[in-house]
Amino acid sequence: MKWTGLPAKIWMSLFVLFPFVWLLFLSVQKNSYINQSGPYGFSQFKRALNPPFSGIIVNSLVYSFAASVCVIGIAIPIVRYISQLPPRKRTLWILLCAIPLGLNFVVRIYAWFVLIRPEGLLTLILEYLGINSPLASTRAGVFMSMVYGYLPFAFLPLYTVFERLDPSQTEAASDLGAGTLQRWRYIILPAVVPGVVASFIFIFVPMLGEYLIPKMIGGGLVSSLGTQIESQFLGSTKPNWPFGAALSLCLLVCASAVLFIAVKLLPKGHSGQKSTWSILQIQ
Image (cartoon, rainbow, N blue to C red; front, side):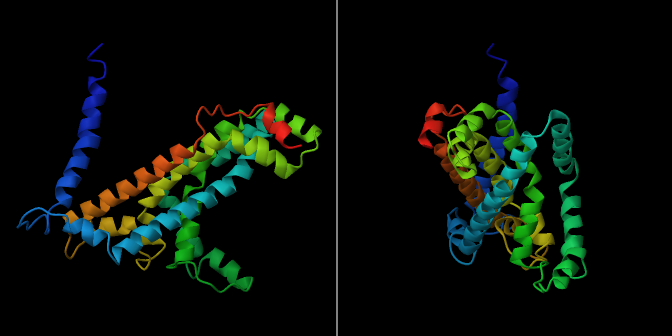
């Protein structure tokens, strides 16, 4: 029995612990990793936590948080509608929502880019409606693209909790005179908290390190933490691996902090369902 966990320990050591230690080793070097000279230090972290990179980190956090909340806000009513459909129609809608997950992420973002570029269909429709604001190479376009790109990832975690909702509770609340908003506040939302938190984590963490969308949709004019890390490691002119490692560790710390806060927000001993007390609170 002692050897049963050995493969998992080897896997975690090679692909989690070792890369983390390697990044930490790179981050404390002062100069370029290729032409290293001088003692170790924390100058790379000082540079990362000072302007302009500190502003890029804050902007990435704010944009990822706002886009994640927007994604969940769009997905919740859709998933609620699907969960109330008959089984045959429900299966069809779940399949339609899952199809984007089977497509390559790059292909989906490129298809979206074709729609929002200056001569794209979506841009032409907005111009016809009198909205001449460009979407490509702007923060608004990047934000919309992040919502579009990560929306499919929120459906399945939310659907698992909405499917388990007890319809008798909402029916009882309705019989007691509760309106739609009251049923959502006291019955539905408290019951789906685990799914909401899981969906938020599932989309926020990769969104925080996203570099494809800012690079393709932003056209290099919108900086993010992901694009900065990519440029430090793969920059064609002067790559700086130590600074890229420091930015990567900052990304890891930010993501871990948000994960810790999200888990702490979950009620202790939450069972996914409220008792009759929630119904009685409505009156």
